[in-house]
Length: 111
Length: 111
Image (cartoon, rainbow over all chains, first blue to last red; front, top):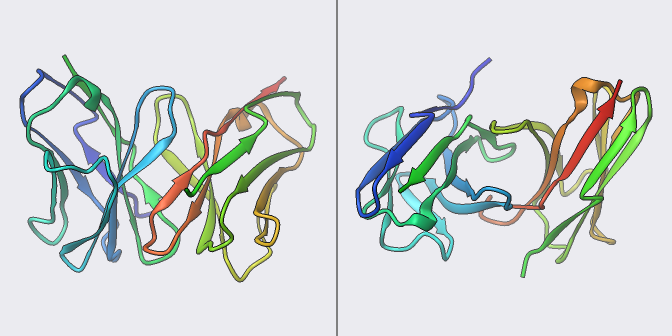
C-alpha cells in the first residue's frame, strides 16, 4: 500500500542552524502539506502546496520557513534559522483532494 | 476561529465494551471530517473520512457520523480491544483542504 515517507526520523540541531526536512508523498497525489505537533499540544497546520506553489499558509509559517518540490517525488520543508520553539514533530501529508495521508513524522530537537 | 473540541480528553474501558468518542466544531462551513489514530511518538493513521454531503462512514468495527447542523461528529468503536488503545484525533477539513485538529481523546482498553 502506498505511503508517505519522511526523513530523517529525528534531527537534532543547534539554535540558528538551517534544517531541511524531507518527504516523499504518495506518487499520484497532487496536494501536499506540512503540519507540526509540539509535545503535548494539538497538531497544527503550517502550509499547503499545490501546482508548484503555496496555496495556503498559517501564521506560524513566517519568513524563516520555506517549502519546495525540487523534483517529481520529494517535498521539503526548510527552516532557515531554527529557534528553541521550533522543537516539535513535523508531519508531511498528501492527498488527491480528499483524504489526507500522513507520514511518520520527523522529530526536530533544537538545542 | 475554527475550533475543534474533543470529549472526553481520556477514556479507560474494559475490553469488549462499545464506546463513543465525541468531536464538536464551530462554523458549519465544513469540507470534510477526518478521524485519525495516533500511537505514542508515531504518525497519524487515517481511520475514516466523511465528506460534508455524507452522514456516516463505516470501516470494520468503526463507525463515524457527521451532523453539520449541530457541529458534531462521533466515532463509535464496537467491541473494543487492547490494541485499540491510542489517541484518537478528529480533524475538520476546511476550504483549501487544510485540516484543523482537536486535542484528541486518549483511549485505554484494559484486558
